[in-house]
Length: 202
Image (cartoon, rainbow, N blue to C red; front, side):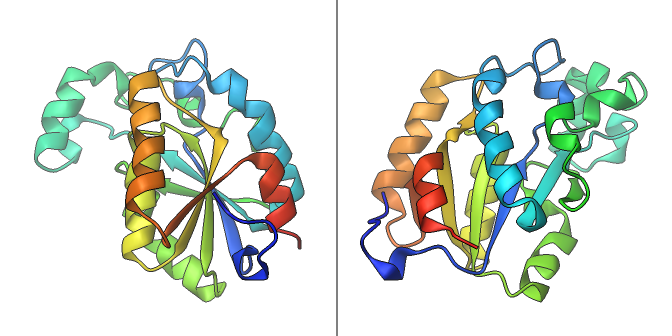
C-alpha cells in the first residue's frame, strides 16, 4: 500500500498497461473470466482518465498449435478451439467498452503470457521515458503475474490496481495479492483505483 502523504510515492512518468481485456475472456467467451464484468467499469474509469498513457495488450493465439515452440504446442493442442483456425477473430479483440479508447490508447499484441513477450513493448516504454507501470486486467494469476514479474525484471516500478484485476480463480487471485504485499517491497505497490487518482495526477 502506498502512503498518500509521501511525495516520494507519487506516481510519475507512468504508463497504464491494461492486460488482455479481450472478448475471449469476457462473459460467454471461450476462456470466460466470471468477474471481468465486475472490474470493467473501474478499468474504463482509469482508461478514460489516462487514455493517452494507456497501452492495451492482447493475447493472440496461434493459427495452429505447431506455430508455437515447445510446451505451447501441447497447450494449444489441448485448446485447439482457441487457435485462430477455429476461433472467431472478434474473440481476440478488446471488449467494446475499452476498444473505443483506441486511439489515442495503443495496442500491443503478444504471443505468450507476459505483455513483454512482445519485444517492442519495453522499447516503447523506454522511448517514452517511463519509470512506472500501472497494471490492470486479466488474469491476476496468469498473464498479469507474468507481466508484473517481467516489468520488475526490466527495472520498472510496478503499481497494481487491486480492484481492477480479475481472475477465474479466487484462490489464485488472493494468493497473488498476498505475495505482492509480502515479497516485493520497493518494487511492487498495490493501490485501489481511488488511490490511483490521488497518486497519479497528470
